[in-house]
Length: 81
Image (cartoon, rainbow, N blue to C red; front, side, top):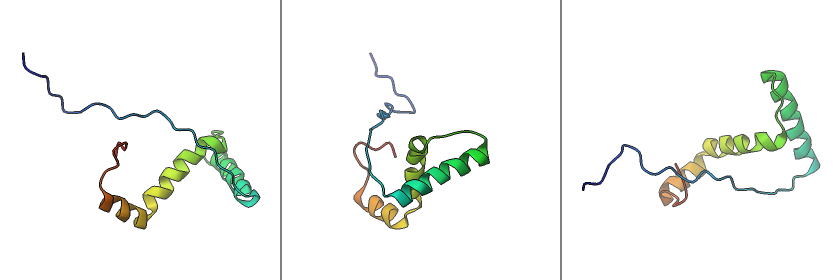
């Protein structure tokens, strides 16, 4: 019997990892304001907690120093990217 080969491999683990952070009052105020502006822009309410993962992803994707260092290290064993 031959093994089946598919174009895609096993799906990566996408189980969310819960993090807890503390921010200073000014950052909290900016996050709350961002959530308000998000709601005004998209006519959809989103909590700060719901927005933070996308904010962090966008930040990391735009940090050229991080991207260069990450590329030099090779793929992370738990990364889907």
